[in-house]
Image 1: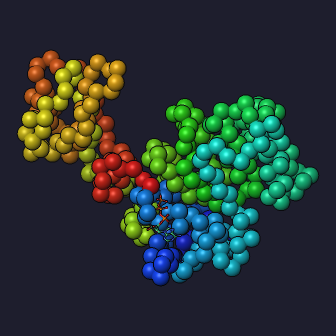
Image 2: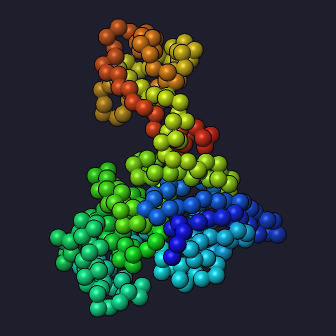
Image 3: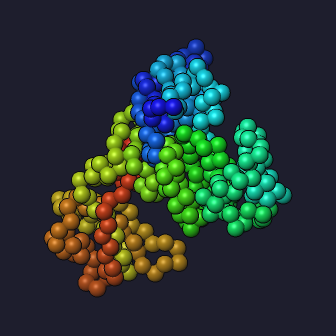
Amino acid sequence: MTGPALLVDGVGRDYVDKKKVITALSEVSFIVGRGEIVGLLGVNGAGKTTLLRIVATLLTATRGRVLVDGLDVAEDPRAVRRRISVVFGGDRGLYPRLSALDNAVLFGSLSGLPTKSLPATARDALASVGLLDVAERSVGTFSKGMKQRLHLAVGLMARPALMMLDEPTVGLDPLEAERLRSVVAKLPDEGVGVLLTSHNLQDIERLASRVVILRGGRVTHDLPLTDLLEQSGGATTVVVLSDLPHPEAGAEAVGGLGIRVVSSERASGEALWRTEFEVTEWTADSLRELSRLWPAGAIKDVRVQPVGLEQVFGRLAGSRSGTAG
Ligand SMILES: Nc1ncnc2c1ncn2[C@@H]1O[C@H](COP(=O)(O)OP(=O)(O)OP(=O)(O)O)[C@@H](O)[C@H]1O
């Protein structure tokens, strides 16, 4: 087939609830290229679930068209299903008593892959997610992260044009999440297009080359991740560790220098206070102004880092919490 892995073209979707029309999506258009990871972001109710369900052929669009690998989801849903793999986060749907290999073979056969080559296909897929050496172990003994990598392996076996990853790292500890991300990061090498949604903006920041932001059922941003991060205008996050709390009275005094207090807290069991500032322009003066907020000697450490996706998205979504829904 030709064309991108996914083409969403002028898609709209209305729901009717108690005779009232609710427009969940209007005029949504974007592309996921082959070998590209696109992050889909939006606060709760922005329309992500509706859009994912339309692409997965579980719901029809009211307007517009969606092509997966050149195939129209409305006209040819069965063929489209063979070209997509959907991987959800969380623990579900594997047979704990079967080995990883047997699980992969079973799911491969359920999705209609040729029986003869299945064991080899399953082994290749297990190898690509780093599970070949535990292929014979029963899945009941696997960690959540290993199970999630097995889901990815199963998804890869059908050599899909498009993988939809919905909250792939949910419930994983930081190490497992990072391991999963490094597997996902390699998917573009296989020519797979990836549409990634995640509450965990670290996933998007680490993996996506482009970000599409939905708001109120419309695309408000569709741009390379680097451009989105540049919208922070070079702002910086500064974390001050001190043995006294942030003196609230000083907050306004630094406002004029483009310094904003984001949070000031002491984690339970920690001796030091952690105060986070967002600084529009970090200069030697900023540091001097900040240090005036505390009595001499109270500041133990100052850490400066560029503003990340969390802050940029939080600002775009109009809330400081910055969580995508
Ligand atoms: N079956 C339905 N009937 C009526 N309205 C619906 C239905 N499903 C979704 N909606 C509405 O459509 C809009 C988009 O919902 P959708 O679930 O797609 O958003 P979302 O971005 O996935 O949010 P969330 O992260 O909370 O699931 C919301 O206003 C929602 O209330």
